[in-house]
Image (cartoon, rainbow, N blue to C red):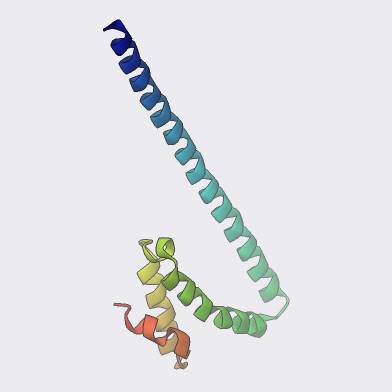
Length: 117
C-alpha cells in the first residue's frame, strides 16, 4: 500500500515537473521568435533606407514586385503561415496591389488570390 502511494506521488511530481519544464521551454521559444523577427525587421528597414538613399528606388521596386509571387505561394503552402491571423489580410493586400496598379496577376498565384475574400 505504501509503495503504491509513493509511486503515485512520484508520478504526479513527474507530471508537474514536466508541465513546468514545457511551460518554460515554450515561453523561451516565443521570446526567441519575437527577438529574431524584430532583428530581421530592423535589418530590412535599414536595407530599404540604404537603397532609397542611394536612388535605387526603381531597382528596389522591381525586386520587391518580383518577390510577391513567392510570398503568396509560400503563405499558401505553409500550414503555419496560412493559419496566421494576418495571412488573409496580407494576401488581400497583394491582390489589391496588382489591381490598384493595373498589373497582371502572375499565373502561378492568380488562383490563390481569387480565393481570398
